[in-house]
Each structure stands twice: as C-alpha cells, then as structure tokens.
Length: 93
Image 1: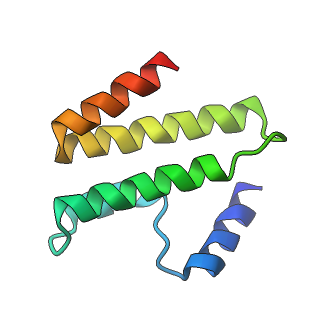
Image 2: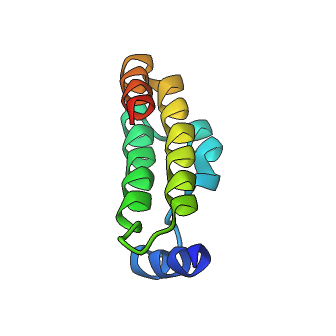
C-alpha cells in the first residue's frame, strides 16, 4: 500500500519528490540553504500525515510517527531550536 502511495505521489509531484529515505541526502545538499532543507523535510512530514486516513492501521500510524522523529532529528541538526521544539511536541503525543 505504501509503495502505491509513493508512486502516486511521484506521478503528481514529478520524479523529484523526496521521501523519508532521502533525509541524509537532503542534509548533505551544498547548494540548498538551511531554510530550503527544513522546508523540504517538513513537506515530507506533512505528506506522510496527509496520506494517513481513517482506514490506516495502528502500525501505519506508528511508522509515520517514527519517520517524523527521524525528520525532526534531522531538522535539529540544521536548526537546534526548531528541531528541539518539534521533538518535544512529538514526544508529548
């Protein structure tokens, strides 16, 4: 199911749609500003939550939360203050 959603997302956004597996690649981009990196990481995060629905299983919801934590840790490397706030908020949930 997740693969099908990713393929549909790639068709909609084009072949350059980044996913959770690209976090480290995004962090290493030299031509992107820190703001562009954080924006793309948050776009990936938002996309994951938008693909959850009422029919999503608990394991799918848990996977999205785990991926969000990875994204927020990456953001914390770029911007410690913002990343810390994101990590604090997701740990409360």
